[in-house]
Image 1 (cartoon, rainbow over the protein chains, first blue to last red):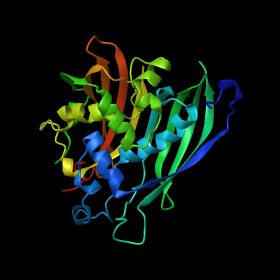
Image 2 (image 1 turned 45 degrees about the horizontal axis):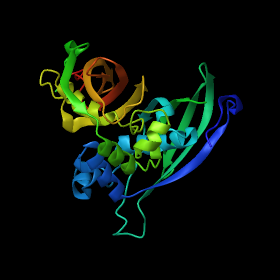
Image 3 (image 1 turned 135 degrees about the vertical axis):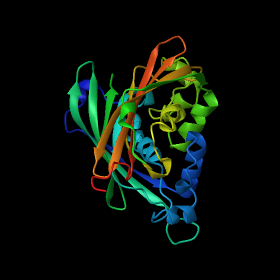
Image 4 (image 1 turned 135 degrees about the horizontal axis):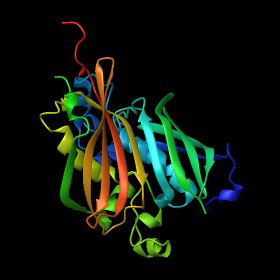
Length: 144
Length: 153
């Protein structure tokens, strides 16, 4: 159920999400987005340019974290503005080869400001392996 | 190779329209784990007041990545793409992108800033319908590592 503008307060927390991220998710995002940079799917080439392993597309992380807000609003079209700074990599190990199952993205958010026209600004926090992977992540959402 | 600061303010027009397809929106939504029926079911989308299925808020990157290549790969600008890292991204929507849209774009080099040995290059892409209706403005900041002019030689 989408929240009503009048019932939302500054400081209201959005239901947090834990999003698993696997190599398959990255390959699928390569195809959907058209960004086939090898660092997102080829471990050998990722390591050859000094990365610890395959890393997620920043835009995949941004999109996945954005679901926190679109789920809360009940409508992806309610997200009028969305901006982030990419502060750290999401490293995605090979689940088949190790006793790990990819990476995890921990996403939370809080209402930062109530704006005119029944809009609110939400501040989003996204972490993976203990590091903040997005900073200054903020969305403006249209509520009913 | 240094970035040419004289390219600040230069604009590039992506005049060949991008046809936003229903299956592309479904594919993108599935790839990011977005399960809203508004992104996949035209009946649900119309019941929600939209003309057709709705693109997730970051879908515009599919177009703006393509369009901004006009700027980023302009040899005169001097970007070494192997040194590029995505620094920041922002979307501002005048309305949601929906299936059936035909969108064109204008890419402008909005900011060239030096941070240490890196150059922060920001492009602004204005997406409109072919009829000129504003749809989305995307700001993309690329970090071009090691591309600032050396202070001492």
